[in-house]
Length: 195
Ligand code: GLN
Image (tube, rainbow, N blue to C red; front, side, top):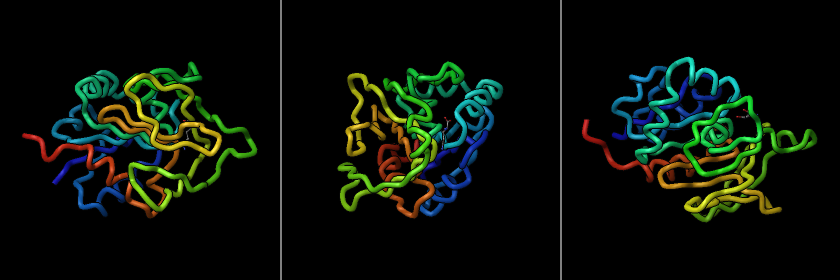
């Protein structure tokens, strides 16, 4: 059984854990550096990136998570998690992990459309389109070489990207009943590691 950690410092980690368990995966909450040991993949949930970023430092998780990212460890970040994975953020109040070569704008949608839901085509998961829930979401402003944009809004704005074993989503798949993006992430995660 694959063993996936969900960073449980703040935000909607409970929803990710529940969804992973529906997929018959061992899902564990991660707060301490030693809880990263023996995992096959990690999810950084949505929430408040300023808070999660501050707690990552306080809990001494910055260096170990950066180290895992450098080794190609599978990591998925949703919403605030995407912000934290980025190399550059529009907001100096958050220190990112710098794991993915993407520029991300926080709270990128104006007040009118602060939060919204829309169905988007995502070729990597096939039909039907994915129902995407955006909550004070970030979007991707630029991607470096080696980053594949997996979903775009109708105006071309990137809202999902993959680089190697890392996956960043502006929206919240854990708040829907559609398991396909978590399944996609689990396909990135190699089989049970030696432990
Ligand atoms: N607006 C939040 C932030 O900037 C992200 C919102 C979310 O994760 N739903 O951290």
